[in-house]
Image 1 (cartoon, rainbow, N blue to C red):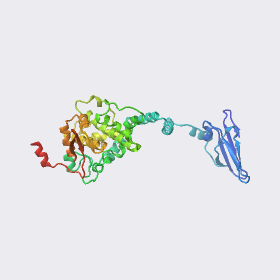
Image 2: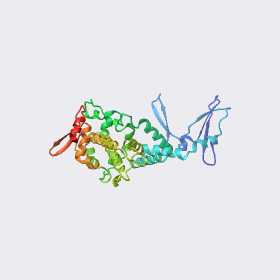
Image 3: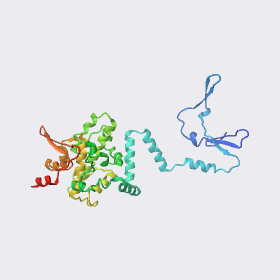
Image 4: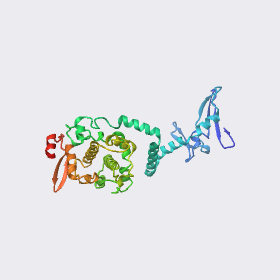
Length: 354
């Protein structure tokens, strides 16, 4: 065993009759890490059934690497330097892994926010996200490619479905890649004991946020919270696109991937954010379908009418175009979704116009 002036130790073990040496040092491998505990070696004597614990001298543990004598090896200093030097990026990655495993909720949230900001600021990341959006963000059917969808501007649906959930499948409205961006909003706020303020969130969401308290299943709670977040983003996007931009929506942050999909589906011109009547109606239909999912397909339209700045009468037509039935119970108007879906005929529309 050799020791240099920097108190670094190197040990070489040479078995008898072998041309292989086993070399270990105290300045790389396990021994290079901070020693936060003491080590001992256990020796089990099977014959007598005894276990003897022997302390390790100076608490030194070496990882021995085999080296064949006579073979040319890399310069030791170069190896040590390569192993000990970590780039700033590598250090940051390692710290991120530790934070994800052992950090507090607050630290994990800070890191996620920081990574999200970096992705938005990185041009290469933006290009990558744009490609992903083109590939998986939505399909032609979701954009209303068929005649029925274009005419009614409604989300993807199954007219023959036997349950309301299958009539307007949620996974075709909120795509697989959207959920991870939604959990950082209401769900995270709820976990940390925060309050959903009325000036930052829609009336529909504020009046239903207490539903989360009644849900025992954590997955269902997470799903409903993310659904509330998606509704919020849709409504804020709708307000941001208006000519008289709504003040409460001005500083609302919509995740980049979701915003790009909104622009493609609900905004004709990404620069001016101008929209056609069809695109406005399509957004309203998406919002109403999500409110039906949130209210177990029996919803009072009063709150969402306020959020959309629409009258109950105007909203009634949109619900009917989705195949909903509207009934009054104790002076309260409710929209429900009977299945299989049936839509109002063109003749009925003409009669109402007269």
